[in-house]
Structures are given as C-alpha cells and as structure tokens.
Amino acid sequence: MQSLSTFHTFGFNASCNKIITVSSQDELVGWLPKLKHQQFLFIGEGSNTVFVENFDGLVVVNKLKGINKFEDETFYHLNVASGENWHDLVTYCLAQGMYGMENLALIPGTVGAAPIQNIGAYGIEVNAFIHSVEFIDLDSGFAGYFNNKECEFAYRDSVFKKARIGKRLITSVNFAIPKDYAPVVSYSPLDKIESPTPQKIFDEVIRIRQQKLPDPNTIGNAGSFFKNPKIPLSHFINLQSDYEDIPGYSVDEKTVKVPAAWLIDKLGFKGYRYGDIGCHESQPLVFVNYGKGHGEELLVLAKTIKLKIIEKFSIALENEVQVVGQYGRINL
Ligand code: EPU
Image (cartoon, rainbow, N blue to C red):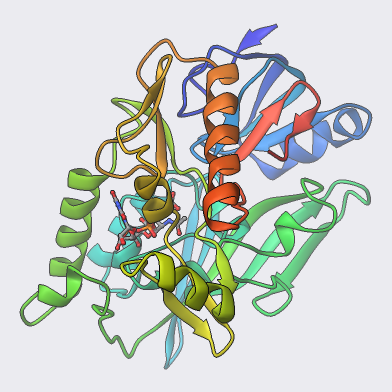
C-alpha cells in the first residue's frame, strides 16, 4: 500500500495499492494492458479529487509535459500536455502576449483536468479557449480526439464526466486563443478595475483568490465542494417569497443559478467545524481540512449539508469535487 496524502490537496492519509507516475505517452500506453484489468484512477495534482477511504486500485499520476505554439491570422494555437500546471500556463500565456485566460489565474490543478470539469472563474469558462482535446482510449488503446463541440462543455461539466467516465485519458489540450482580445470584467469586483489590462486582471484575480480562498498548500481543500445548483425559475420565485435576499443568476428564461455558498451560509454553516473538517470562514462552499481530518468526517459534513439544503430549500446539491472511496468514485 502507498500513501496518497501528498497526491490530493485535501491531504487525507488514504492509501492505494500502487502509485505510478507517467512522464510520456509511450509510458502511459505501456501501462494500458495492466490498467484494463484492475481498478485505477488517472490523476493530475489531485486538486479536485478527494480520497476519503483507502482506494483498492492503482493511481496513475500524470506528469506529461510540453507546450507547442503556432499562430495564424486570428488565433494563437497551443498544444499543451495534460500534466502541465494550469496556473503556469496562464502565466506563460500572459508573458507571451496571448491574452484572455487571466480570469482563470491561480486555479489549482493540471491542464488535463481543465476540460473535464470545464473550469471557470470570474466570468470565464475554459471552453471558450479550447479547440480540441486529445486522449487515449483505454479500451481500444488508440489515440482519440474531440473537437470543442464533441466535448459537450457545460457549467462544470463535459463529455469526460459522462459516459465512459475515466476511460479516456486526456493527453493534451489544444487551445485557440483569439488575437482580438477583449477584457471580461463583468464579474464583481473585476468591474472596479480602471482601464483593465490583462496584467491588471491577472493581478486582481490572484489578489481576490488569495484573500477569499484557502491556499491548498497551507490548508487542505479542493475548492468549491458542490456546484452552484440550477433551479426552475418558478422554484426560485417561490423561494424569494421566503428569502427576499436570495441571489440568483439567470441561465435562460426558465432556469436560475443559485450560489451554493449562500445556501450553506444561510443554514449557519459558515466557519462551522465538524472534527477537523470545516466550512471555510470566508467561503463556506469550500470545505477545509484543519490538519488531522479524515474522509469519514468529510462525508458526514457533506451529507449533512446536502440533506439540510434539501429540507430547507428543496434543492439537491451535486458535488463538484470527485470523491473517491475504496471502490472508486462515490456519489453523495
Ligand atoms: N456567498 C455567501 N456567503 C459567502 C460567500 C458567498 O452568501 O460567505 C454568496 C454571495 O451571494 C456571492 C455568491 O455566493 O455573491 C457567489 O460567491 P463567489 O463569488 O465566491 O463564487 P461562487 O459561486 O461561490 C464560483 C466558483 C469558484 C470561482 C468563483 C469565482 C463554482 C462551484 N465555484 O464560486 O470556483 O472561483 O465562482 O468565479 O462554480 C472551484 O470551482 O473550485 C471554485 C473555487
């Protein structure tokens, strides 16, 4: 058994049967016959995965590296290996004058994880910059490719989270970054930036994240634990009669997105602590490990909050984080 405590940002001392690191596609392909016959997980930096129990399988850690760049009249094109660090890529793009992804600065994790959950922050989702995603199909052993449309991107969702989950191992992501840059500063407090430039947005996003979100290098966490739920407009209007201050963002004419942080805050869970696990004091949607927390405590806290939100608001939260137990992914 090998400890996973340094392989996921929650830091629980769960273990797995074996940890393998792959640094090239050939190495990954070489492991495929073994992976076909046993339970395994392909992870990046473990910033959106939490091992709540000992995992009875192999963990394959993605260290595929490399960036290739070319341009045409309208786009910068980048082919980025999936094991590259996300924030390093954002920093590289800014330094090279390829603008637009600054709003996504400081999001923990690898480039390969970005399309899976279609990472997003401060008014931008990564799908706006993704041309295509390359992967190796576990069953056939062949390299595959999905263009942007085939990735079925949606809010914190993609084809990689649906059918054949975990069977397509993302090896690289192709980005197409438009040359005609326009800053996206609609999301508060970016709207306060005077004469926004890519550098100012980058700096401000980093400042806000550092101020509001706990740093996984200092205190174990995996970012937002739940997705912001989408509810029918009729349900939202009913809730407004009981909770005048409930925030909501229109998704389309029939659907409203409600901040899960507000629902959790309203229940009084902000700063709440159960054992060594808690809801962060400035962003209760982020669950944190105060040091000695374990998976069982996290499950109790998450399930309690989920249940109370159903009781009080008739809203079912879905987890945003990938929760892994002995036999693989767990749905709370
Ligand atoms: N709120 C409260 N109490 C709080 C904090 C927030 O009521 O203590 C309410 C407020 O109404 C606030 C709203 O929640 O306006 C939204 O809060 P925030 O702007 O912090 O964003 P979020 O919806 O909670 C999402 C992403 C974050 C991303 C931020 C910024 C999801 C699940 N989370 O959080 O992404 O950084 O927007 O764009 O969509 C992540 O995915 O891990 C992540 C951190």
